[in-house]
Length: 465
Image (cartoon, rainbow, N blue to C red; front, side, top):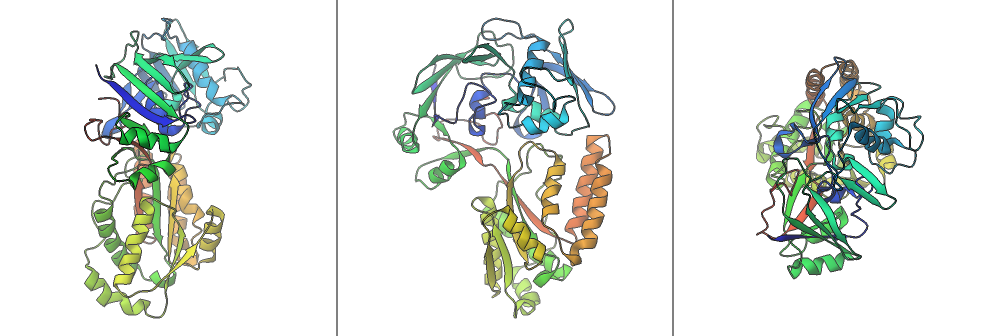
């Protein structure tokens, strides 16, 4: 059997699922089961450690039936083990990426002391059932529970944490960590027999392993991903869609006519599709909230736009607040600049150093396009709308925004997630008719690998071969 060689940096991978860096979650997910899993393009939860689940009518009480499973030492996984593992995320010293969300969400979690189990987490070991009581409905609860950081673990010694996942740590040194098939694993994942995690101190060492073919793949943070992207012969496969951004066309300023905004929006969509072919909606946000439009707002060519509107821009440059940094949003912004320049329209870039400067510039109203990027990772759709709120629209767009926020405020009280999602999508569509934006979404966590390593593209679990 082939041993899969995965290279990464020492500080990125940690045997504790709460402490491993997000780029190494595909590896930590091999050691631990989560209550459920969400994989591939369907966004459909499937059973993992929980064989089934149900919820109350108000979506505040959830019940999970725990399937038969064993930790790697042979100990049976109980519902109490699960509650203890989940409680670790809300303890005061927790380093979990979900700590703040879960402390506000789970009943009693905010006041939970170190080592305590909050009132909203309780177990019935006789029936092998876990209960989670929420302060309020939360549409992304299942997505959070499916995240690899939420792997169910058991601490059997000060420096040893074990799980019930498909693999276990068979050996560990300063330079490598070896994973082997867990014979006690009762789940459905199909995985390699052995994986060797090469841990390096420096990025250059990982480059050498890839160039010499001593590593089959590498997991790295974004700054190093971008370096590999620029190196000849390196290959990458998108794993998941977390990074999102928007180009927002101002409803005032040079784009002060709805017809102009619609025409430019249509051209921009066409260009972005050519440059960013593999766009798809952001994972774990309700359907259609961040969906890429299936068609242009209107059909128009560059020549028609130039003939129709170039005179409108003859006396004033298009002012662009630039806060995109790198990545696909920069590509989308480049598309916008190329379109304007092709029409003989001048641009003025307003550079900003941080989000506070962006909001100050936007609040002044002295802009025509703002480029905004952010990480939208396993969060409630409400957070997405908060990005709009921070754009501080000026008076010309105020009416459209007031209607938008009224619709969103009403939708937050809808009990059914599907109904809530549909209301969000409808409100967003109505807003875009007045205050247009181009949304770009792209993976920012990648696995770099050789062509002959058949890891599944666009698959949330790269090791589910």
